[in-house]
Picture 1 (cartoon, rainbow, N blue to C red):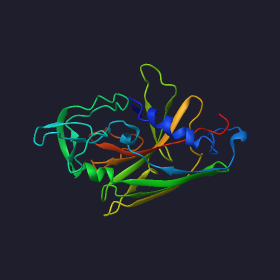
Picture 2 (picture 1 turned 135 degrees about the horizontal axis):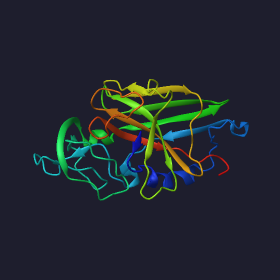
Picture 3 (picture 1 turned 90 degrees about the vertical axis):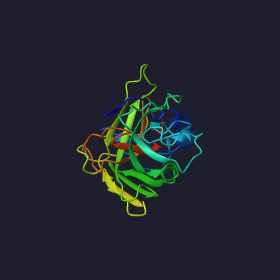
Picture 4 (picture 1 turned 60 degrees about the vertical axis):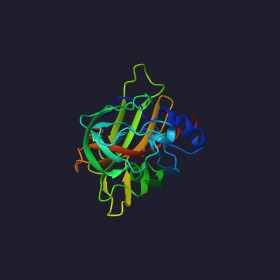
Length: 243
């Protein structure tokens, strides 16, 4: 599935220099790429890269019926969060595209609760098998989540062709699901074959987690962003060694 705009472009410019020396692997039949690799993962929000949050919205004026995307300048952490009445496309590079849109369903949490989430983990690859081990805190209590391996052409085309979201693990979306406990804590562990596709010469890559406010997963598809599916955090993946 394709996102309409790139959520990673600014994040990658900050993340890749510090990670450029990590040993990484391109998924390939060429034995030259069958190297061991390992790396730590730290999840971030869109606002950490000075972008607007993409899938949750708040009212600047309570009761107005109009909702906006939060930005780094949003200070009211007690503001209730909403979905829009109709799906709003991802436009992370259009920083000024923050609304308003007609208010939809309440999401049952505040902006501060959304931003209290934390995600860390590690990834390793050896002999063509990858191990993804993730830990999360302060997610949506009892929330249903999925993990996505996302990538896009880089440098971007004009207009941008899109960001492709693939389920982590099997392509049918049966291995990328997890549920937070009543405190919002969760662990996610998977052994995957082949290893992750990392950032390359003409490709950027990330891992992202999405909360499903409709209480459903959608198999190999993400579900409708902003109304059903809400990307909460993501982590840029580094370049392959030698690029």
